[in-house]
View 1 (cartoon, helix red, strand yellow):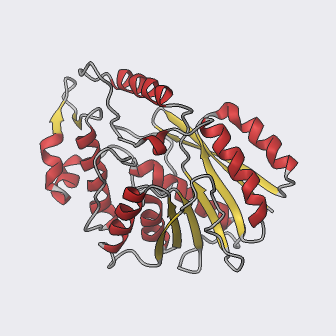
View 2: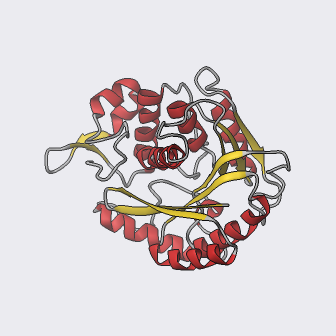
Length: 297
């Protein structure tokens, strides 16, 4: 349960204190046990255990009173999602006299917020940033709205909007007069359903679960959350090309990149569209490595 390489400001350093988390969310208690090494843990191959662990983190550290995800939808790992936001804060800090920018005047655009609306929730709790969050899926859209609405005492200045054209990313969302400090995205990185299943099977083997048979996703995820035609490569290519039309509306465009070997392709496209600035920020959580691609004009 030790989480390595988290951002220095992360609230989630070291091992989870499961006793404290279970005290904050009693539903977690039934999923806590001692493994064969006499270590208190949860079964990370069990989707319900993973859900309650992450919900407990939100209740304990961020004072949320409500957070629900429809069955089968993606449950985000909170420490990694928080790290993305901490790194964006650093990115903005480099342009604001080395002071971490806080307050609702900082405005973010979350592409594909999911049923959890996790980035606006964390960004608002950590930095009081305001957000526009987009979603194409109707069920996820309604769930995201509810997660924001039910936490009105702690979550301010977040608007969830429906992207009605799933072939577009910014079009229909960013208006001519809009100004954003950053965009962010956790794109579906598999190119097919079969590829997603194979990745799930590898993850379960790596977890060393005792379960066998049909693979289950411990963090869940609907088809549109896990895979898209052309995978991460095509999605981010489209994002970069479309972002040219909104160069004056946003200071930094950013996205997670799961596959490092895609970076040279993205860098080539950014050169072709004459992006004036770009950065790659490395991130790590345990054995999982990813990076944030950032660009702007």
